[in-house]
Length: 307
Length: 296
Image 1 (cartoon, each protein chain N blue to C red):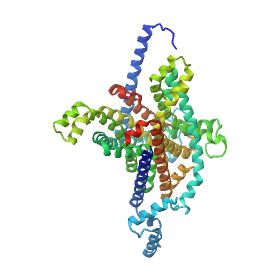
Image 2: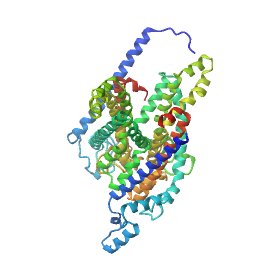
Image 3: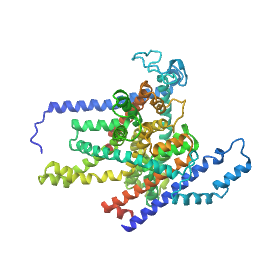
């Protein structure tokens, strides 16, 4: 197990280096950053001085080394527009994104468990078809459009919930609802299909023959094992969560890191876009690592296979 | 948990027939929707009543014909710059469809090649490729797109590159699984024994046997790609104005949602309809070609 964890940690580390090289290359490929400073007044000496200040006169490997050591110390550079450290700007916005993402995750996970199990245990009934219908719609309708239609209904016509901003509980309802709509179908399908697999297994049949009530068979014996399969999809769920957050923050003018990144995109503030991408990349790697270790812990077959 | 059931055979027959009709409908309707979309995309200049970028400030924010103040000269109304919504919808089909075709051609090609190599060669190559695939699967595509849009600028090719950059991963994962199974098949072993080169085994023996799951995957990803392109264009990281992309049309209407709901409503509904059609067709094909995959 220790060996397995060490190998996995090393692999994640290598992947992180790969991603940092990729982003570094992208920045170089996007053109000379001194163009942003160039006006009719700047002389060649000025440009040379700026190049020196930005460290652009050093060799490429040296530049990469400076970039990576900065990253290791949590230095993501400085915003080109606001002239503030990117790390500070991200940290200011991060709590907003986390509160949105975490509450949406729990709301949709609870709903997905409830509806997914309902669908699996009452297979091919009216209820199951209803659940499938929601999943199909949720996967096809664009989330940003559903959100705007929700604003039309709940903020413009009925004026129940505010259409943008943060602060009160009411501000959470529409954004969380939108994200849940986005996350629910995938989660529900996972729960439903893994529950169906588990319900078909021998130990569940035994539990039923033994005369245990349905309630205990499903919620105690089956649920535990049915939750293992969705665990492997945690990486994909995380990707959906990020996508959902960026879209939702944009629709509802929610001041999180997704919105920060989009504002930076429109003002061509590259260091911020790069900073958020790197942060998410680290999170993706960490989650994959944790899931792998957790999964190997639950299912020993994987440990031996990989060695 | 059941008591004895009395089987009503008439009802069984009726149910089966209803189910058959329903299954046929889930094929016919999606095919019709996608066919209409292809026709609209190809003949857009002939079918659209107005050019997609014709601005008419005197006609701005006109309602669709079925509402008060609407007229049949602009059936689905006009947007904030007086552009005809119906015409922009028709041209939008062009963008959605061509992005989907480009991206799917690239991702399916790369993903299939990597999947076959990974599954057939196995060993360290497989472990390495699958690690990259895992990371690519978990990385949100829209971040790559925003990163690219910020460096090389938003545009048609930025969208295609951004969606292809990670989009090959699901293909590689699926095809690798199939190749892994086929590797152990007798006909592959026989080909190896008579000295066929690995390259030839992969192309002539493995590839023809993974075409079914490949077709299913391609159909299922049509909706996915169209949806992601719409998200990117909505966020301003995709196809820039004045081009008529369904995603940026929805965005145009966001500001006017309290006065002119139709600007956002119709393009969003079009995205939903097309994605729904693609997904239904994919499901239908999966049931026909490869029932083993039904649970996925």
